[in-house]
Image (cartoon, rainbow, N blue to C red):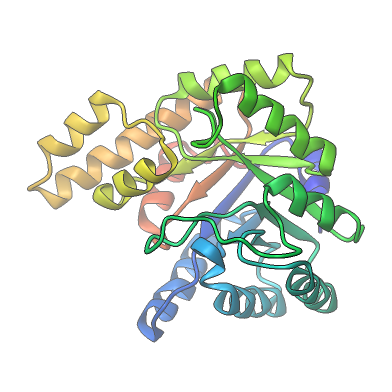
Length: 291
């Protein structure tokens, strides 16, 4: 089923993001996490592609297994950088063969080793280019990423919104946001999007605080602000694993509760391949974020 149709047909949706495990032990934990979170009946799950497409083969393998098991609607990430049109076409044809109906189309990040975007002849410079290419296949519901605080490479918020509109024009029919920890930046983004005439669903991406050093690293890469109060909270309990876990769960529970109070009905959780935080937060909210 297509994500665009799921969102149209359901008042509330719940989804999770996972990354492909790198080891056999990680793979066992990955499928255990999927099993644990399946009790919440997520409407779909997304599988990341890795910086520079570094997990391409593993992503495709995981997507195939989940789709074959018919456990979840699966949304593979697909990035444009580092790929030419033939390689993307081969992936699309394979996804068509196994019945995939959704793709999250992203520009992608450079590999950390080089921190430079690769130049590829007959490739894709921007996300909108990949989105338009995928749209021509007329096979998928196409999601894309948006940045509540502006894309790191955008000159300003106005230019960022112009680029967001271009993604819609190219064929994106839903958005998932980059992480944010202050809901005000999300509400401001929604207002800017509304003024710009963007009328596709914008789903908040909620980063779980189950590994705060890793979260800070990821936030730095995408220039997502860590509020002073959150940083102080995590620093205060840095030497107490149980206290920092509780503080992280409480912070994200309160963040989601505020979003719900403002009428937000669709949630996408960045799990970092761990189930406990997501489970406790959803249970804390008495399943209000799931129909």
